[in-house]
Length: 324
Image (tube, rainbow, N blue to C red; front, side):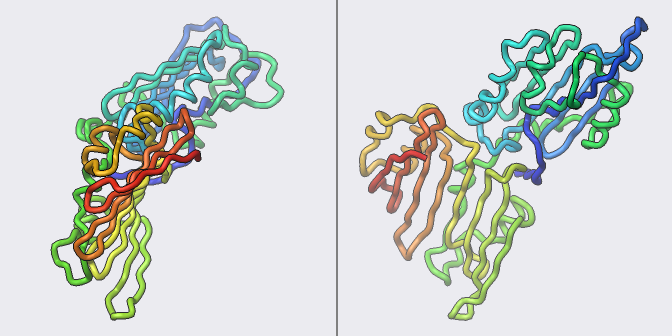
């Protein structure tokens, strides 16, 4: 399971442009830039005559794990509201295509047709103040994108995601359920911090204290997305995992409603709820001797509601619906 470090910025690439008066009848040339990091591949192409940019094309490939999303549906709930703001603008076209584990975006701006007043306030747009015309300086645009870690590309030598990176599924509830919890401080069958570190890498946060019994207690956290909206945290006694929490605020479900919520009755199996509703927004679990306790939280952004299910020994015992 590959993880990505935090990075600032949104999925829709920063459209970094400057406006200057310049015009030429010289043949149109292409200049390419790329920024490749944190689960996102951004490719920017300027089409220009001399120093005047005539149009601009951006292609993005972003792994769902970089959004803190686990599938197409949860990625759509993150990206579609942003994409909607780019629709219906003359001289600008933008489209997102959703794959199984990643999304592709293409955005094109034709500066001979677009009205800058229609686009300057869109997410990620950057224009100099006081602009009155669609004259974009290629030279100054290149200077600015380089400041934002874009690298110039020649001979089409772009960096690419590996096949494994494009097909590897984000950390899922199945992975979470595979973490075995200790029933007591002397349980030797539980998952260890060393095993999680081997799978996820070095923890992003670690806190250790000495327990009253002399056994070391620990808290460990791994970020599962660069925006830190998805993370796994565990508490330990010695090296054994006692409790676990999976949080992914980028994961939201459209298919859950009050009617579906009401149909899931007490006694329903933990696995049956997941089968019915899919990946949860949040999951927690701990054990006390022979009894296990768990919660599953599902968020619906459209209705702005959380649906929370409580389990004992993998059986639903209660549930709660609330606004957030």
